[in-house]
Length: 233
Image: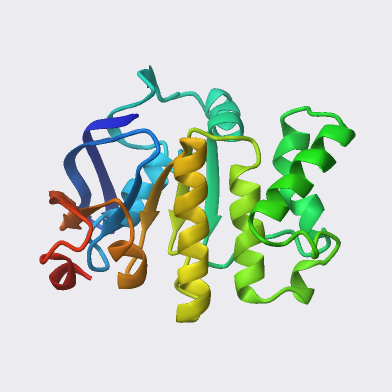
């Protein structure tokens, strides 16, 4: 479970102070797939970056499985490496690495030996339907295949939380639906929580829950297929 309390974040634009988040509270249960939705400037990307420890300059408190988020940068780097996974809109794969090497990279950083890295990475690539593409580099993979490699990389070290930023925005509908199904199925199976910032109604409608933000404030949390969803996206 991830819990955040009174999260505040401000930016300085010249002489003006802009409040990106204005005391946001929330609880996300273990294994949930939650969409952060709202118009541009609503604060969803800011909250996502804070939950992913990509931005540590904030006020408030965050706990993951009742343990406080680290505040010191070296501890935060270790925490990200061990507890968090990331999926980005532009895939962010290492272009000179094969799919296998990209997926194995977090395991290498966490000190697993070569045989474990390879075995676990092959298994994860097979689970996302890419067992026949383990030696392909990103430029020889389609967008959907690259995103599936990115999902495998995010989950390979069994993180508690995966942060996903517009993971389907660059994909056609068929491929987007496939990617959403893989994320949701593996997240539920592994007990991994997904927090997804998205403008994509396909993504939001199929998450377990939607959290709406507007002008840095939380509007509420709805079940999937909420009638309020269309007004926010």
